[in-house]
Length: 286
Length: 288
Image (cartoon, rainbow over all chains, first blue to last red; front, top):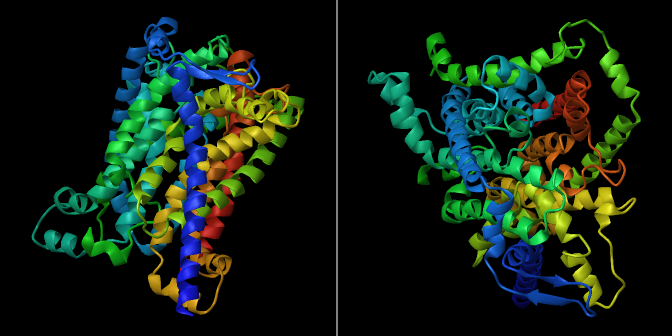
């Protein structure tokens, strides 16, 4: 009996390993193919059987600035706007999430899912009138205009995450601090925020990635003075379809590498991201 | 602990201001404008009633776009949920290298839809891609890009979007799966429940709010599909992969028909709000 159990276990482990290996392959092969193309390694499908042309070079990576002279500046714009938008949204969402978490249960039940609907609202539903509003405010095609637009688009998700998390945390230390005369902001900064630091950091990183990848918002709200990478990529491929694959692959690789490095360094932090709220059973260890 | 009114203002003020200026007021102004001929360059604004919507609903291209996005949503969302749940189940228990696998599975989500669209455009291309390379290597006849093929373009777009989103679903479902108490799994195992039985009777009931939330986000994202299609196919071949968001953007900017663009954009928002109402009802029922 025990033997069949352990045999079953081993078989299950093997199946899991095979399935995960397939999943990892499905994820990595397209990315590897792209990175290799950027380095001058690509297929020649005219020979039979097809062959790989191996001509390692960094020219394609350098060539990105030839088709897009401002590429590095646009990369810097993307980094700056994404960081600022993620920080603004996180900073504004955290107090609101706390406020919802400490509201009456009935209100919490209604507001939480409502926030998620707001978070799912497509940018297309409001971006055209938003561009008109920003034009009148003199914020069209400015860093401030696009930064706050992206912060607003991601804020509902952040509020939802914070509210779900904080609703599951204990209020004892907050109440003790309040009884000692600490004001709300002091409690928020010195008691609530330190305890919630992992989810706050994880959420800020997730928002950064969302901001980094937004296309429609910057496409409509910016474009001449301010240009982010997704807009640049779109222009290259919809206006000038003749861009060749190695150059495209180089542009893709360069735009993806900062993000992979960031997540590679911080993936322990990102793993703490959860829509499901705090798990009471693990609370004391955090 | 009770919060006073000034305290509430302090907590909700900042996010309220940002949302009001950059989202809610534009959305409402936009809704009001859909009943007029309003456009930024329009000197004389007139009330036109439902004319914008009538024009959109009478447009063949929009009808095709709605059909495309309906197919896309109905196929892609369950597919992403199923694959994502499967991956999360495989990652539930610790094993050596789990952390690396989790990191690798996050990669597709890091790629913007635009970049993913560009990438797959070339990956599936017969000259530059691996698909034709593999097919030729097996000694078969050369294969043109499925993105340019009648009847294949939409399924291919669905496949590519699932490649990008399913690993994210796994990432989002994993904390919920991990939070299910060990005893529940053990009981179910001792009761002789199979993997699918444990999934149906243990995992899904306790993860219902999370699964609903993820589904809501996926449906919102699917109905708004724009970026990836723009760079992958541009809506083609013909109109086979046109989406309502693509239609709306084209109307506003390529054809300078601002009212049509704004009104069709609101139709997408309306569709998401309807899905949102269903979600709100389901979510209200799932709380204990």
